[in-house]
Length: 458
Image (cartoon, rainbow, N blue to C red):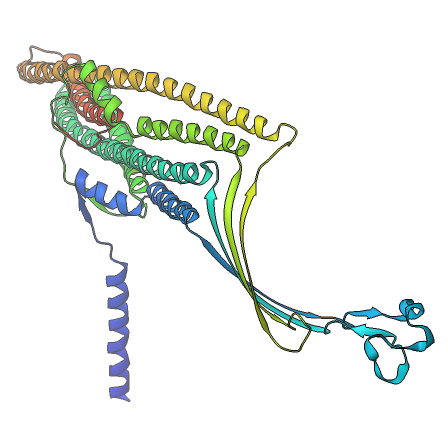
């Protein structure tokens, strides 16, 4: 019994240990590039875009089959209630005296002559090769080809958007974490200051109001820390959602906020690159080509279609209704042309022409929108860059002001209010600097997306 309990006690410990190890979640160490690699594999929008690309590739292959002959087969079996026959009673007046036609024996006219069988079998193979279709097949293949090109550009556009979303989410987390660090540091400063004020209050060197004023500011800083922690938690969840990871994934963010020069010197340079690289512009160009091909296809209905058709059959009974199989074949050249359809072809042509005009107008609107988007993104990035420069000076001044004010307060040359103001100013200046850096990195990422080169630094 002892051995039995020992054995199962060890087994229980093993199960508990295994379950604990399985439940332990590994911490991911991610920078922007590794985050993008995960997003490329897991993001559902990108998966849909890739599946759409696969669909258009299959449709292109399908369109290519229309150039080649089609081979089809058919098998049938027919069971009749009676075999086909010719009734002869209506011809009895032709054979006076009851004579039978063709010297039939007995001199009695039969009631019917059977001319078939009640069981019929057939097997046929048909080959059809289009010779002329008014360019329908060629235009259909061209439409499928440009649809595939458009799907490729759509996949690029989806990937570009994903890159920007990942970078934006990444720097938002870093920004929130920095705010939390600044809040903790400010709390330490205020706690030390409040402790000094309490000592001064106990010896009668400070009024109760001044002590309460410092304690209130300490509470406000604690509130800022709580807000920063909440922002970190929410931004982490949003980041995991963008990457397609479980929302409770533990992540360590390795990249730090730092200044990277703008990739473009002027709006004109950025706009020129956008016109060349933007996938949505390339996609719209493909749509214009498709629209033109659709117009050509609608006009093709005015032209005849010509096809070569060959059939080979194997049937039962034979031509003389004998109970045997026989072979048969036919070869045809078939021409077909629409002569009158109450304007159906004309109205279809009008529809395709109207659709083409819509696409062309949309293309112009998109081009103008790209110029506007790039200009706005460039100016926003420049503004964020300038804000960094100003914030750096503000932080330097706030640090010096806090140092001087702190020294003066210790020497009795500055009031408690002066110290509290200096501390609040320093905290705000640090937060503004972090905001400026994060906003600049996001603005730079947005500018790169606007020109069609997200994730590429210059």
